[in-house]
Image 1 (cartoon, rainbow, N blue to C red):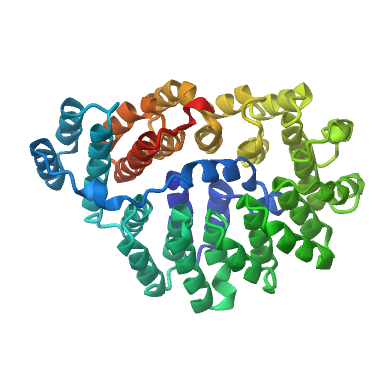
Image 2 (image 1 turned 90 degrees about the vertical axis):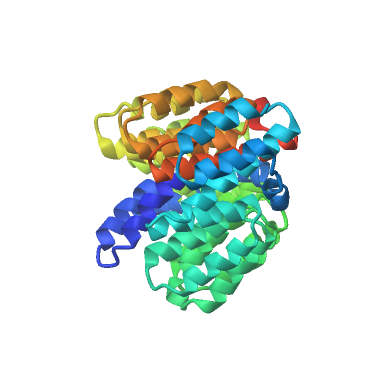
Length: 463
C-alpha cells in the first residue's frame, strides 16, 4: 500500500497535471472514472484488516529504543553508515525471533533503519519514513507530520501526510487530522477526509460526520465510505441520518453499502431496488457490491442476473458480491476478467480485489497478484496482505524474487507486514537491506508491525 501511495502523491505533486493525478488515483485508491465504487469499495476487507492490525498497539516505542546490548550497538553503527546488508546479517546471527528479546531487537533494528531514512533527500520518502515512525509509536512524529502539512502548498505532499496519519490511525493521529481539517481551506478538505477514512480510532466518527455536510460531493462520499470502514456500529446512527436526507441514488447506495458493512441489514431494502432500477448505472454498481455484504441468499439470483448486465461496472460489482456467497458464477467471471485482453477490464477488476471474499475466491486474487499487468499485480498483492495468512508468505516471497520493479517488491513487503506472521520475519529482514529506499523503509515498517504482532501473540497466520 505504501508503494502504491507513493505513486499517487508524486503525481499529485505535479499540480498542473490533473490528468496524471486522475491516472495515479486510478492505480492508488480508486479511479475517478469508477466513482460508483470509489467511495465504498475499499471499505470491504480493509475494515477487518485495519481492526486486526491497528488494534494491536505499537505505543511501546521506548522499549524499541532501550536495547543497547553489544550486538545492537554494532548493528546501530552499521545502519548509521548505510551498511544495511551487514546490519541485517548481524541481526539474523545475534537474535532468536521466537523469544521476546529477539522480537524487541527487531523493533529496535526497524526504528534504526527508519531513522536513517530520515536522511533521504526526497521529501516524500522522508514523509513516509516519518509516518512509519509515528505508527511505531513515536508521538513526536505526529506533530512533525502536522508541521509538514501546514508548511507546504504541494497537494501531493499534503496527501502523503494525511495518508500517513490515516495509516497510524489512532486517537492522536485522528486528533491531528481534525486539526488539519479545521485549518485547511474547505475546497481541499477531501485530502484530510481521505486520511481519516483509513483510520481505526472511534474518534474518526466525529471528524467524518463533519464532512457529511460539506458541499463537495466526492468529499461527502469519502466520509460515508470511511464511516463504514471504521467497523464501529456507533456510526450507524450517523449514516442513517445521512441516508434519510440523501436524494441521489448513488449517495443512497453508498450509504447502504457502509451500513451493510456495519451489519445494518435494513440497508438491504435500499440497495436491492437500486440494483433493479435501470436509470443510474453507477448507483446500480454500488448496490450490487453492497448486496454482497447483505448475507442474504435471497439476493443471489439477482446478482447472477446482474453478471449479464449491459454495464461492465454492474457486472464486476455483482461478480465480486457473489464471492461472498461462495457462488462459482462470480469466481468464474472474475477469473476470466483478469485474463481479458482489455486492460481497462483488468483495471476495473483489480480495483475491486480488496472486496473479493478471499477464502471463497482465493485463486482469483492469487492469479491477479501473479499477473504481468503491474497494476493488477499490485492490487492482488495488497489483497493478499489484507486477507491472507502465513500460508501465503512463500507465494509473496516468490513474487518479490521474480519482480524487477521495486514498487512491486515494496508492495510485497507491505503485505508481509500486514500478515505479520513468524514466516514474514526472514524475508523482511532481507528486504531491509535492499538498495531501493521505498523497499527498505516499507520493509522496516513491516518488520516492526510483525514484531509487535508476534509480541502480542497475534498474527494473520491463523486467519
